[in-house]
Amino acid sequence: MTPLLKVENISKFYGRRIGCKDVNFDLYPGEVMGIVGESGSGKSTLLNCLAGHLDPDTGEVLFEMRDGALRDTVTMSEPERRMLSRTDWAFVHQHARDGLRMNVSAGGNVGERLMAVGARHYGNIREEAVDWLGRVEISETRVDDRPTQFSGGMQQRLQIARNLVTGPRLVFMDEPTGGLDVSVQARLLDLLRGLVREMGLSAIIVTHDLAVVRLLADRLMVMKDGYVVETGLTDQVLDDPQHAYTQLLVSSVLQV
Amino acid sequence: MIEIKNLSKTFTLHNQGGVVIPVMDAAELSVARGECVALTGASGAGKSTLMRMIYGNYLAAGGSIIVDGVDVVTAEPREILALRRDVLGYVSQFLRVVPRVPTLDVVAEPLLAVGVETEAARDRARNLLARLNIPERLWSLSPTSFSGGEQQRVNIARGFAHTYPAMLLDEPTASLDAANRETVLSLIEEAKARGSAIIGIFHDEAARDRVCDREIDVSVFTPGMAA
Image (cartoon, rainbow over all chains, first blue to last red; front, side, top):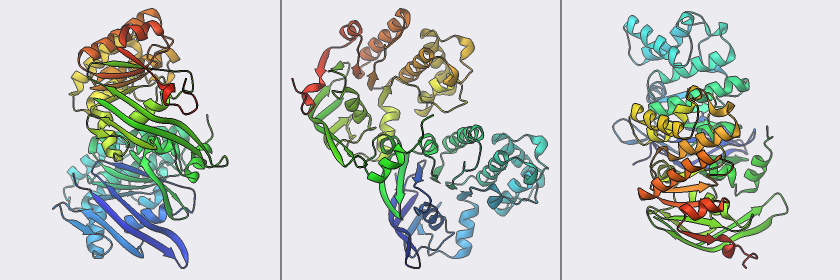
């Protein structure tokens, strides 16, 4: 098996300050990787470099295109990268309003992404949108409502539907459950886990919530001050952490 | 099937003055197909630590653990996950599940993961739940709200759903009533008869004598604890 994504020596500096430094990893098809660390550890900077939202200062992000060739997405042209982010890639933002169009109906939000890849038949688009709203547990009766009329959890589920409708191969998620009630979080996690399995998605999830990665991620990367300090199988890193910082992180979680 | 050579383990507590605790040294163990080996030794001797290392949950400091040709000590995360999916089962004492998933699906999941058809997987799950006396009216509910004993039996059903070629059992009969204990022992005997290599921790001596072919006292591998 060949990797879907090869990340080589990615570094990003903000002036003299380190955003993230010398990050390397391979992500294989169907693999879900979690990136954890405290605020300012560089995890969001890294995610944004990988997803093409930020230009890294060094390094390559090699993605396996549909023809099997590895292409560096850092140096590809803007239109090519935009096409990727509409088709093979998806990005789930922490705040649903960053990933949704708030003045367009729920059905329109999902349909829009389909239209961006060339779907034209209104009936088919609406049918597909309703199907996807169902998969993220939003009732068909809400298809014409705007996201502003939805609760936070529903907005987040709508954002996920909008992202997954085009059948991407790689999903980037930035704190997908942040700011939601725990009961809503559980439902969202259960849903995400099912979709990841069903669609065989590869995903990179940035979060500071260790319970989220235990449930969703196959493997874990721990970041501190812009550096990767530990990587490994998720349950191994959480149950037998090797690095001082990871030990502190794991032992700081409150037990319920 | 399971071949352990010169295995060692230390815990380094960076946030407690960097204390290094050696917990295992030069452990050797070999388990063939169809064989069941019991780990014995006092509490703290490292029985669970050894099991967790074989499962890849704890990181070894040195040595090798070959399970079906894969060295768990050096394998990539995805290789360990594939091993856990196809080859190596683990029945722990505690159930850890995603909220909201019905019991029947919890038990059928390991079978679906190896590509068994949904209905066949559910049939096997129903059969196991019935054998372990979980009332049928509970099958559609999430086990998170079940009693401790029921959760333990759901966990056993899940652990035995797929016929793993190698299994790790951590106190599978602890606190079960006589009928359920008997079911679990039969499940272990059936797994052995199919050729599974099994390593278990049993505080229940009668159970150990019945299903295990030999015993390994892990305290001989524990630095400072050797008898």
